Length: 107
Image 1: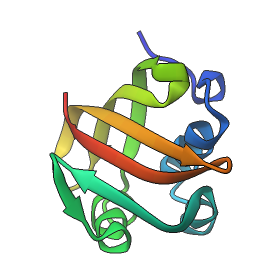
Image 2: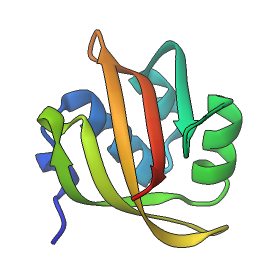
Image 3: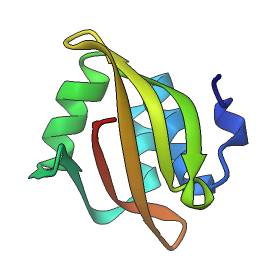
């Protein structure tokens, strides 16, 4: 089962997934707070470098399977041209209606 992006509960997370899935770098940046951070499999990463490599240059896409924590925790199938498809978890910290931190890793 999948959850349509427009039915994601948290507006900031919904905007994040929408921008990721449409490959819109400009909108993606506006969804993030200044100084936003991220981690991948428990290791802090450079957000700009990671998102360019794993999302935008590699045509990353998310298909959300479930959401919890008022829409701030997702389990999704993430696919990109580098790694193919994998089941992933995403946890978001939202501040002032924007994503301040996200953590991703294999589910």
